[in-house]
Image (cartoon, rainbow, N blue to C red; front, side):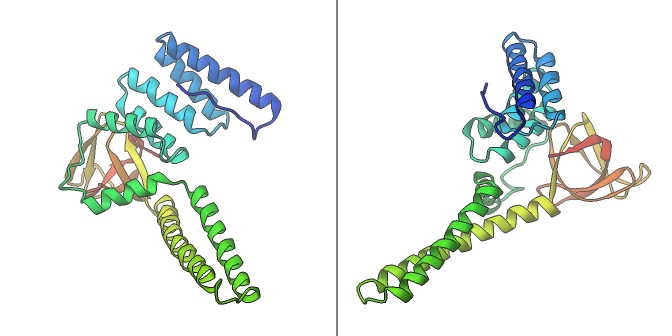
Length: 246
């Protein structure tokens, strides 16, 4: 279990959020996992957004054997705490227990590495790093203008090149994260079984069946249906009520 703070919220809201968080933790330690999950859900519904709440919520759902809910909570925790080893470990273990597995044949090594790299840094951290690189490049160029001594030229040039490479890498990762967030909305199957069909209607051909905990990417919505894509690239229409967005 984690401890955390609500430093950005008003004092009265902080007190209530802290009380609920501690209450949830107490219930969890007592083995009252359903009650603990309910308290964490109330805390999130109040507007709190913290990776540690989602992590503890995932643990509570995992203890209740609600794998889909646990995976969803861990996924949300990972977005708020990228690179956290406990979150990554619990998410990996929960994924081992779901019925639908991603095999190495479905997802190549480059894709897996790309996902790992994207999950390692948050969008805010990447934005901050890119800003620092820009300031650093500007400072190096100014230094090159006002301190043009031959002995300092390699220093200014090396700084510009090094920071430029870092800026390019960080900017690329940031662009991919923004694209994934805006255009590839991840979702988790919540239903025990969810049939994927060739069109947004029960009368269309069934092309696959998904199970609780499976991760999909939402392409578009139509009525009460969602067109989703699996990591393997296969797509189909599922009922919107059977999945929940990360």
